[in-house]
Length: 278
Length: 293
Image (tube, each protein chain N blue to C red):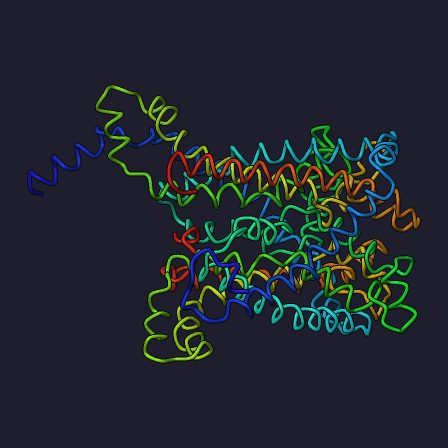
């Protein structure tokens, strides 16, 4: 085992640690995902495409991807603003709000789902206000968007926050002494420094939102072709014992997830090269 | 009032540092983000408790004393009690291998460990069904031998392990990279054995980071819905965890019962956030760099 090492190490326990790691990784992650890929390979890309290319599957995948992208874009902008306010401004309740940002990580998605639905349904506290204005939030795409914004909320804030803390004020002062307005300094000096971390958070929020299930299914209304998300369609196919149909949509989603993981890694490599850390 | 403070006051009123935004913009931004957070984070949290107590605390507690509710709570606690030690052991092993040794494919290994964060929980459940379901090769044999995985406890444990997989490892790896190997190497030259080095040198250095990771893992393990929903079969009183029970009660329009169970999990989330924040304030220097505030 220790022959696998690039440099000899006096540290003990490589075999044991690597053994535990690889065993758990294989049993929990690699074998199950392998089973899905095997299923996909068994009936071939054409067959997978034939299943996905039905109106209902395509609508579900397109909906999941489109709304997740919108939610992640909202979180990209809002997360940067929130991080900026939390680091730079002082106001009562700041530390409470800082701690509360992680609520979507801690609150189970099913709880978030029924709470958001109760709030934004036409008879709910906010939903009834919206109804008077002639808008419907729950059981529409807007409802899905709100649920996905909720689950992705902490990612950008938490990746950007440490970067803002590290920004040296002198850089901004230098820009100001050279005659830049505040807006120009923010646009040309601050935003470029935040961009790599913000993009990492964006990709993480996007990956999370595309696959989100628990918080969405309550608020979505789940009307086929309209508000039916891809993960829900997988669950429906499984309940119909249509394993091939479920696997095809699963492979499509896995493919999207893999592409995103690659994008995250590329962003991280790119940003490390630019500023040395993420 | 001395001249100095007077000048100071006047300057404060008139002069704005070029590295600050205009006061009106600061107020507007602060109110804006707090407003959005109130609508998205605080309002749903309040709704959970309000709806749980809609018919009084007695009705809420009675719904939790229901046998099905009790069995759901027990199942969730059982699953978590199995998942946490496994996940912690894996996290420590993975962090040890990755941070104490140099080997080929390390980056690939880290990517694989992070993989579950980029896979939809529902797809994770689907993978387990394809691997262990009764019409698969392994699953068929296991069911025939009397050890069903899907629609039973092992499936729920595997699904929960999958979605919580990277938590502890991700927390430990940056901390252990930062701490380096010097202290362990010193202990080794003084004649300590491997386990002694781990328990007396490494573990005390990483204990708060480990606790932090386990805390986050615990919150996710108790609340996981998507992956568990696919593999559990939702058998009332047997394979329905707390989040699954919330869904079943909600779909039966048993609002008080659903929100009471939800309030229990929301309380857990609040405790998690409080402990997490305390850890961040107290032991910031011993946690991963990106949690420092």
